[in-house]
Amino acid sequence: MYTKTTIGDYSFTNCLMNASGIHCGTIKELDELDQSLAGSLVTKTATLKSRVGNEEPRFDWDSFGSINSMGLPNLGIDYYLEYLVEKEKQNTDKPYFLSVTGLSETEIYEILKKVNESTFQGLTELNLSCPNVPGKPLTGYDFELVETILTEVFKFFKKPLGVKLPPYFDNSHFDQIAQILNQFPLTFITSINSVGNGLWINDETTAIKPQNGFGGIGGKYVKATALANVHALYKRLKSEIKIIGVGGVSTGRDAFEHILCGASMVQIGTSLPGVGPDAKFTQVTEELTAIMQEKNYRSIEEFRGKLKYID
Ligand code: SIN
Image 1 (cartoon, rainbow, N blue to C red):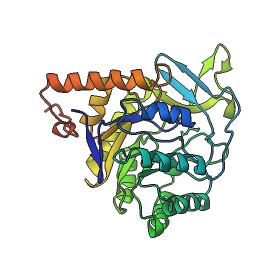
Image 2: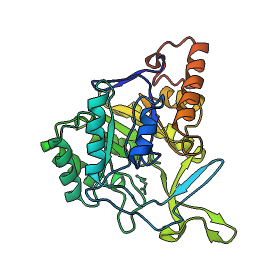
Image 3: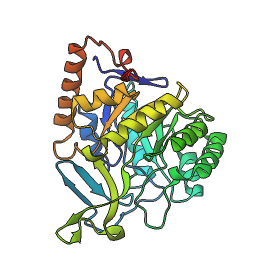
Image 4: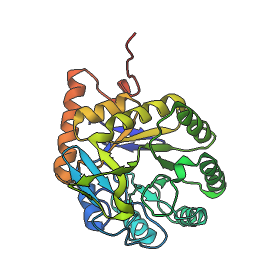
């Protein structure tokens, strides 16, 4: 396929995949992703123990995007790890992503030790950017803590690791986070998680219940922020750290723009559930391929990161 890609030592038949949290909480959903045209899949972010997450309603959407305060509902690390290990036996040449986090620093180390000791051979995405756990600050905005966590993690973690980052909004923050990430043998980053602490109102009432209606915003509303983060980090990170772009992707054109900004893979989030993996990945792959054919690009490497600036 025109849209094949690589991250670290892994090759993918297609650069498109789901975003963690979208259609990836259960074996049924993960299997549907696996059977689609997506080049890989990532699980729902797993914690050590299963979690029910925040109170409902905790998700709402309109034609431009979504708000969520899910609160990391998930079936626990063992569920997702066992699923992926089994998948790896069936599809020996398809790399998969496992998303994990901890509600404390200790839990992050504990969960990554478990992954390190398992037979899982794919890539691990450490989520440092969930904005929705009441009382828990968003790790990716605490630069000192990110550095401490990565220092500790790389003392024992020997598998390919990436981090999922929140959106940054200031050049000094792009500089600071890149300076920290460049110190470590990271295989990739995923940028961006939802834009935290948005507020939607229906008539006179908040659209979702947790945290008095505050939640992470995704979809078309955040595409400009996502593209800026992908490009700002592409310009600052060492070339060994590949970028997975996420935010506002519902068409081949959106995916093309993420790649132009520097993404090696592109995740689809908010626009996936309404349509389903089969139809969505077929549509976006076909549209992206058509754009590439029209521009005479035979691989994504021919235009990845080559965003042009007005003179
Ligand atoms: C959630 O479960 O609250 C969303 C996950 C995330 O934003 O990382």
